[in-house]
Length: 97
Image 1 (tube, rainbow, N blue to C red):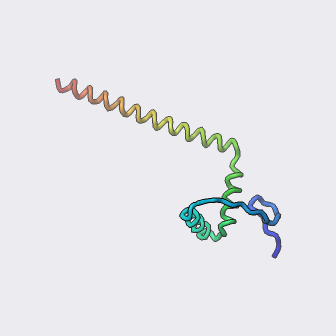
Image 2 (cartoon, one colour):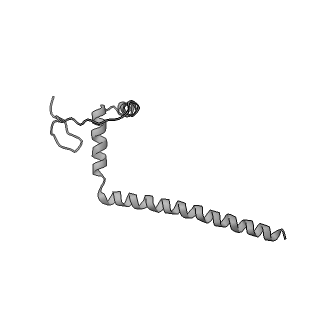
Image 3 (tube, rainbow, N blue to C red):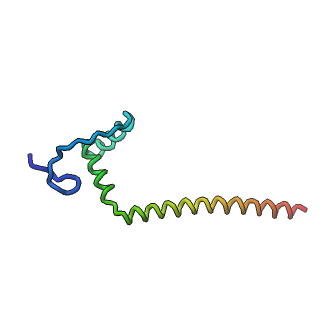
């Protein structure tokens, strides 16, 4: 059996181990996902790690900026809704006079 390409594209043979602690439920969930993709648990984690590592720093910064903007928009919308509700209540009260 020849050397297979590793998840980073090299032909180096996998000989190192990494111990990862997780709950039995987490392990079962990851094992199910790996199995459904036709991968061993080790290959699943190698590919997931390689995919994570391939995301550039600028893409990560952009993602963080979008998440922050989304949170701010949500807060702003909630605040605006409260102010509008108060204004509508005041208008209704004024119209009933």
